Amino acid sequence: MKLHTTTETLDVNDANLSGSTFTDANLSGTKFSQMNMSGASFDDCNLSGWKITNANLSGTQVSEANLAGLSIVHCRLDGATINGIPVLDLLNIWEARNASLGEQ
Image (tube, rainbow, N blue to C red; front, side, top):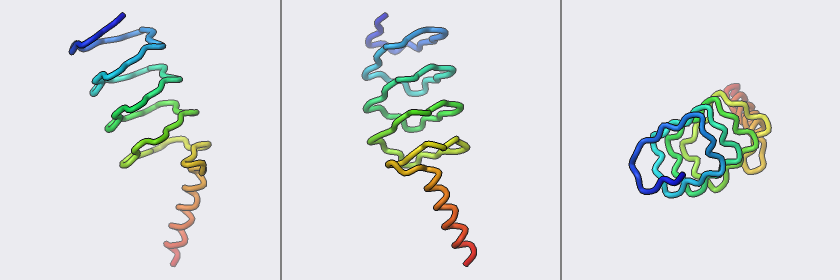
């Protein structure tokens, strides 16, 4: 199936689109639910304002990205790293530092 130069809204349900390519497409406001996007690749994409909930991101790598304003809330972080440093170690150091500042 090819879809070129269109402004139609698609309602895709129970479809296998594995191996598909989306290039120069405006997907703003699109809702993805109950999706298997394992192995998907995003390059040169504007993902600002994304909301990701109930997702499995294990094994995911984010590189050369602008994460300004990123908020991570109520997430499992074991094994997660930032520039090779375990996130849980960073959080423990931050908590210990703040605890010692509170005692002074």
